[in-house]
Amino acid sequence: MSNEQDYHGHPNYDVIGLILVVLMALSVVVDFVVTGNKLLSVSLIFGFSIIKAYLVIANFMHLKYEPKLVDLFPYLSIACMIIFFAGVYPDSASIDQKMAQDFMNLEVTPDMITESIRLLEHGVVK
Amino acid sequence: MSAENVTIEQVPKGRLAIWLLIAGELIIFGGFIACYLLARFEYGGAFPAAMVDSTGGDIILWYWGAINTTILLASSWSIVKAHEAAINNELGKIKTYSLITIGLAAVFMIIKLGIEWPHDFHLGASLRSFDWLPTEYGAIAADGGFESVKTLFWSYYFIMTGFHGLHVVIGALAIFIVMLGASKGKNLHRVELAGMYWHMVDLIWIFLFPMFYLAQ
View 1 (spheres, rainbow over the protein chains, first blue to last red):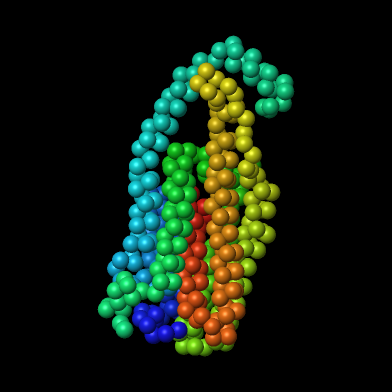
View 2 (cartoon, each protein chain N blue to C red):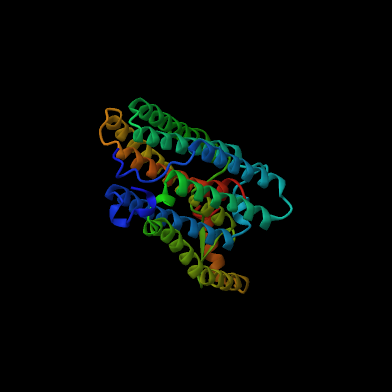
């Protein structure tokens, strides 16, 4: 491999690998120990995941040694996911509430009962 | 040439291409994860209920996930050591570390397909669609929707872990093909490119593990 291509540094991969395994073990410990506060345990577990992801991207994938423009590749992709989630969640939640309300107000008609019996007789539902 | 002085034009094209591929993969898996989280927030109670069998025991066992996470982290370490060996022209070490990575990938898949998935199906994981009754609004699930939502969880689980498993297989094949040339001193720069793809596979699992095995 030419030096032209290997302009980035090489951190101590053994230490990084060890930190990653320790963080994974901490995630499991948190899941078992912090049982009283769900928000805290979920935040810690996913916080560890974000740190692990950063360590892999920055050190193993050498992103921290690349020009800043290359950062756009992974970080814009992650931003796309966040934008999609943030854009869809409010609509998704309100539609779900409407469906739940409709379900609560549902009046069973004789036709529905007849159809249900027919489906039961034909083994479509159990 | 030091890293501080490098401009985007000087980044090798192969590396940029792999970053572009990784960006596409992250968007695909990011979409999966976003959809899963939407469903998880919508149907809060049914998803954890899907993960226990009729006796209340866990169907998805955290320790298999933890073992597989450790395996992937170890494989990320071994492939980056192969890259280091490629820089130092240590051809024997390239082969050794690449074979370690491929071996770890094989163990990962054996655990996933040979142990975990059969165990999940045996204890009640289901992909069957449930029955629907016609109503004036369209249709309602025959059971009020609870079982259908449980099936939805398993659909997410098998599609996301299955698609990830497919990437493990593709990554291991890529590493094997690159290793054949690199161990003879050919195209050593490809060791890094295959390694970057492999780290992306590891990166995705870093988030799938807590989503499906912890934090319920």
